[in-house]
Amino acid sequence: MRILFVCGRARARSPTAEQIFARLPGIETASAGVSPDADEPVDADHLAWAEIVVVMERVHRRKLMRRFGAALRGTRLVCLDIPDVHDFMAPALVALLDARAGRFLPR
Image (cartoon, rainbow, N blue to C red):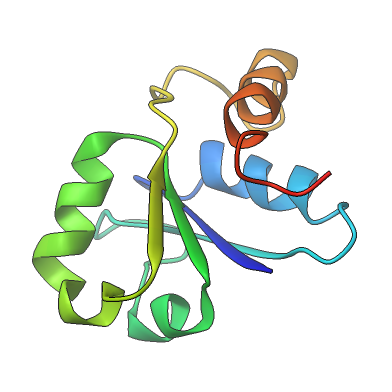
């Protein structure tokens, strides 16, 4: 299963998710951001690679749909509703990601 995690600037939430879920067997992960100043800006190649796209906020989903609507057809899109208030690998962020992403990840 290939999962792309998306947040705003790809500096805290999506890179944290990428690291913690890459440890699961059978899971490949990547992270990117929708903001122009993202460390890893999301592009069509990311979306073509992903089987599931996980966004941290609804605004990220809207930006993806506006920019890449056609490229997202047939791709499962999940929103975790995690606000940008956590630092990279913060224990609270890790716990929140695990709790919210657990509903669609194999264990």
